[in-house]
Amino acid sequence: MSENERQATQANRELPIATNEDVEFASELADQADVEARERAADADERQQGQV
Image 1 (spheres, rainbow, N blue to C red):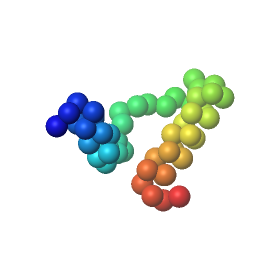
Image 2: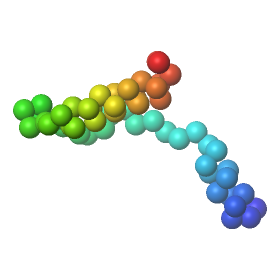
Image 3: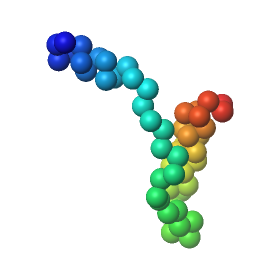
Image 4: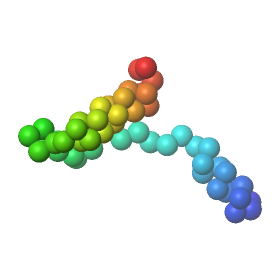
């Protein structure tokens, strides 16, 4: 198998979905960009789980 074929095979496999990240969100320290990023992350999680 050539290097290009191997890379294509790897790229086409289903990637794992992380659901329990060890990240803390401190709302008292968050600015507007942090709040928007948290909302985008939640939306992305929902899309990955096929809920939207």
